[in-house]
Structures are given as C-alpha cells and as structure tokens.
Length: 208
Length: 179
Image (cartoon, rainbow over all chains, first blue to last red; front, side, top):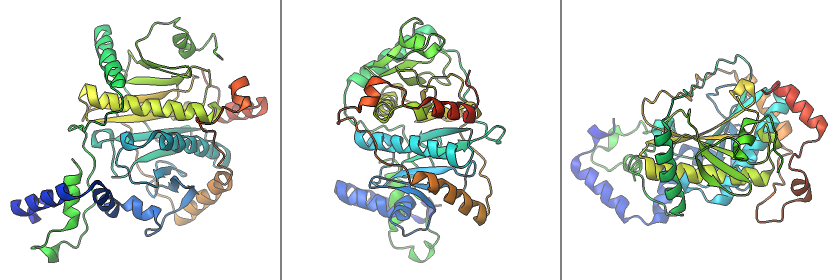
C-alpha cells in the first residue's frame, strides 16, 4: 500500500533523509513510529500488570489464553540482539516471576515464554516482546516443533560454525536476511500526495 | 552440582551421553539437538537440575537467557537464517517433555514447518479486568532480583534448589507430574 504513494524520487529522498540521521535521531524516529513505545509512555491505553524502571508487562488484547502477557523493554529495541546483557537478564527474571504469578493467580498449569526475532520467526511488532502465555490442558493452543533428523556430520559442521561465531565476540553484524516488521501505516495518507510521509520511512527502517 | 541420575539432560551435562556442545561455562551448557526442528536448533540449559523455571535462581536465569541471545546472534551470523525463536515450555500442558529446564533457540526460515502461532481468544472487558486484577495481586510481589555483579546470595550457593519442599510440592501438583 505504501509503494504506490511513493515515487522513486521520494524514495531516494527518504533514504537520504535516513542516512543523514544520527543514531540518536534514528532511534527517536523509530520510537515515534512504535505503538508499543506509545503504550509504554501512556499515550495509548493498556492493561499493565507489572512495571519497573526497565520493563512493562501488559495484557495482550489478542491473547492466546486469558492472562497472556506481553513483556516489553521500556527502551526501544527492534530485536533481541540489540539489548544489553543486564537488560536481558532483567527481562527474563521478570518473565520468570510473571510465570510464577500465573501459576498462583489464574490457575495456569504451565507457561510458555516465546520471543520471535524476525518476520520468519513470527515477529509482528517493531518492538522487542517476550510473550508469557499461561497454559492449561486442552486449551486449544498447538505449538508445532517438528523433530527433524539431522545427520551427524551436519551437526558437527553447524556446531563448529556456531562455536566460531560465538568466539567472534561482540561484533554486531547487520544481518541482511533478518527482516523486521514495518510499522503500521496510518490511514490518513490521502491528503499528502506531494509530501513525504514520515511513516514511509519506517518501510526503509525495516531493513536498516 | 545438583544433578539427577534419571534425567537425560543431567546425563548430557555430565558427558555420559555424547552431544555437540556449542557453549559451556560453570552454570550453563548449550548443545545442538540431533532431533532439532531445524538444523542449528540449540538447547540451552542450566547444569544444575531444575525441572521448571520457577526453581531456577535469578542469576542463572540471567546467564541462561544471555547465552541464548548470544547463540541466537551466532545463528544469524553463521547459518544464513531469516529469524530465530527463543522458546520455553514450562509444564506438560505447555509442551515440556523433559523434566530439566531448557531454552530452545530455533533458527527459522519461511515455511519451515514450525508453528508457534495462536488463534487469539475473544475476551470480554469484564474477563480482561478480572484477569488483570488477579495477576496484579501476585505481580505486586515481584522485585528484589539477584544480580550477577553482586555476590550470589548464600542460599543459592549452598543449595541451588531454592524452593522449599512445600513449595516444590505445590508446583509439582499444580503443573502435574513431569516425566
């Protein structure tokens, strides 16, 4: 839907604009586009069940089960690899506590914790989310993790690649394969044919 | 180290069952799964035996998920995949099959046969409010996390299983018996 409204010149202008943004400006811009940042700041209403200085937990409005919680970093990160170690630790300590709370308060018999990095993994939002989902027997949720048989040689080869990549240290390589979801388009783009809609920049940010 | 004879993961940790390790430190081990959902599917687990996440001390939680995050990045870097999932199943109704807490780090590509989606359930405003209140009643107790920088609290160093017997019984009952 965005493509037909943007001419190639505008697209280039947008790309140029993004290129010239400082990392701070870019982050600020991403933040403005992000519905979850608006929820965190309270501009958009939500049902928060936990909040501290680093994270917010709120009830998913489209829950897999009643009590399904979205655990968000207050800082805007599109994907998990961008998050510093101390925040990762904190997010999942809170996830553990939320899981614990679900067992005690809403008769959950189990919980799932799920993170999706990239569209192929099921990521829908531009903001890092850890899902904590209360589970019961026969609750209609069916996560499918097929068991494939992987040859011993392949395991060995993959293992060595991973070991090498882990030893490679902290470098943050851009991954061209990783596609991050675009921000949702606003509906009111009609009146601004000639103008560059800032929302369209997010299209480009998706692969940036 | 608190391991259990009958636990297959503990056997892997103690090298009684061979595995392809990709990471190991004093608390955490990560191995490749021969029956993975995709090539590169890794199991990240605490070396100590804890059946469910509630029993894993905060410091180990922090370490486990940081290692998972690093492995996820390593998968992106070296396996040319399009995404990764971090997946935890806690309790049999959630799909847990082994009674040793494990984090799955799963490389993803489009149409790879893995499905971690769900059909949203429709809840009334009233139902949402009820759930919100019940959860808040418990989550107000969340806080005071153990941090890795600090010295580990005595209770964790001496006895890695932090739940009292009563509590453990409560959880086991609540979550049904694990295999």
